[in-house]
Length: 349
Image (tube, rainbow, N blue to C red; front, side, top):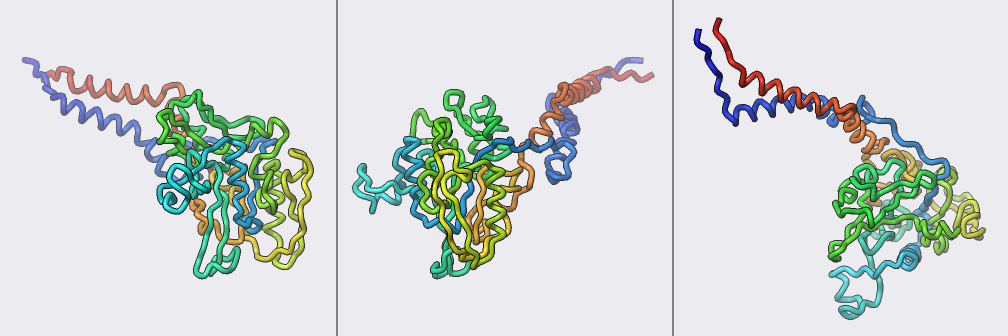
């Protein structure tokens, strides 16, 4: 009997190849769609280093003086940050009177922002009140920026847990900018040789036994430095306080070691703290924590986030698919099978 050869167009072959590839990737797609806590592909979260350091920000103690913003600029040699909308009132063009940042940028690593509602007359009140929040890098326990960086320009110190950026290794892909759920890393688009900028917890000062600039100058102790575990204990102590109680608020380093001992102050608790410590569980936890009397979602911090960092899922899927090159091998085998099936001779016996 004569042989009949099945003719397959290039379009048909590609269509079938896509179907085969889609089938091979179906498991990975299902893993992405499933909740992180219920996903079999998820890798274990990374632990907090035992000697991790960070900051505790107490919104109820902050008076909005922005001394921390000024100190951060000085110790990190950051230029003034004046937006276009501020030029009309901030001195003459090219010679501004004040540094007036309104958000984190490539020129501002730390900024104090304000919440206001209604009359705004009551401090630390969600209704007809106002409150402050400090925005900077939170130094995540399991940081997304480190996970996505293809050249290890973003790193997390194994001892201190500080998340740092190496501009000499950076290729400017800005994956870290897109991946950070807190919107922290910023790229300088106004510089032909623009770099990624973010808070590095003044690690150059810590190396000399000096406090980070923001904690060094804070007059009320609203920004407190120390071991993250010690700061968590202090945060839990404060959230348990009741209005009318008199308590002690330390300044500088909570243990009085880095930068020397600082005199704190005793004060009467004026408002009830929110029961939650921001950064204790969010996305695997952060080394910089915050307590407040106003709900954190009103302070423009992301609250609808999982307790595990996003890298636990993304890296888990990658490691599963590429373990022993099984994933690519399955896709290649599927494509090879389709090519063979669609080009072999069919004999009518």
